[in-house]
Image (cartoon, rainbow, N blue to C red; front, side):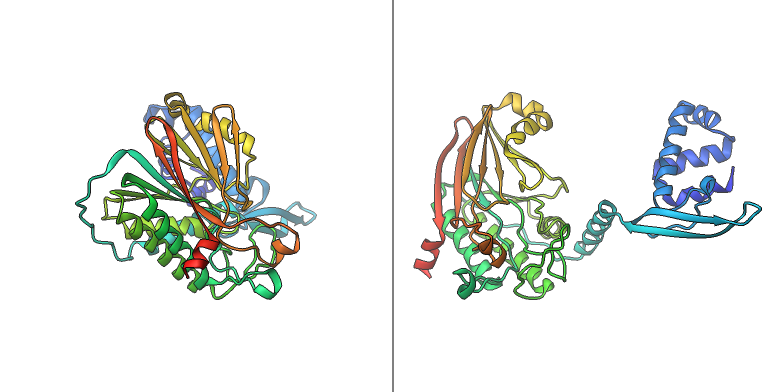
Length: 390
């Protein structure tokens, strides 16, 4: 077996390592395939994919590329210069961040750290619940960590206000909810205002108005979400939580789900939907609800996406909804087979939004769905109600 194939092991998956071992043992892809009960083409195609992955990190000896870059980066280009005999004299390697791979590495790191979090002790319940009803509480872009100054934008907002408003709104909405067996808390994305210590958006580098240090923002945000879950558990048997990936918190939204999934690991009454996907779905009888942030897709595309990703559920349901955030406005549009709804936020506009004239009302809603009839009730908690009570 060649040295080049042997070096590829550092980039291989577990299955590809098996292929490489068979090639080293048998001599070529065809013989390795016969040993493993596969075609030689299957193994050859997998090795080619492995070679492309290695080349992305700078390893392709057939092209004189042997200077690799760390995991989480990819090679953007190489410049090789040779002597008069054709021997390599030197090489410049230009690299760039591999955002998808770094996102995966960060998720793995958060998952590992979350293993040591203390677990919540299960809470018994003695209520009688209506299993035909499902209560849904969508959070429209909470923006924990955002700072706003009333003299500049008309309203004050900081980390303490964000926690107070969210928890108070959930307290009120839960008190207005029937004792549905299921309650689904839907964070429509941008739970956190920023994803990094620099206080900038990851993709465009826009400077954000931050209230305080990121670790404190995370600590208070997780605490607020846990308080909302505990509040819902007082009235519902099962509480489910969906955290959509927002454009302000692409990494921390996933970290929030990972942390909550570990904290409530031993509590069967709490279900955390922690798949790292852009869209999530909830089924309740003849009701199907999709969840996304809304920055990657237009509203008119969402029904078709739902019908494709959840074809079986689409065919078995009559009442279909897609809930989203992102634009902070209160809109509902019915498309063929699906209602798409965008929710307001409790947070005010920051200096950037207000300066650009992007203004909206502020409230949060409770929506009750019947397993056969779809939405049967809704309650609104406006920011004015919260301020009046305060």
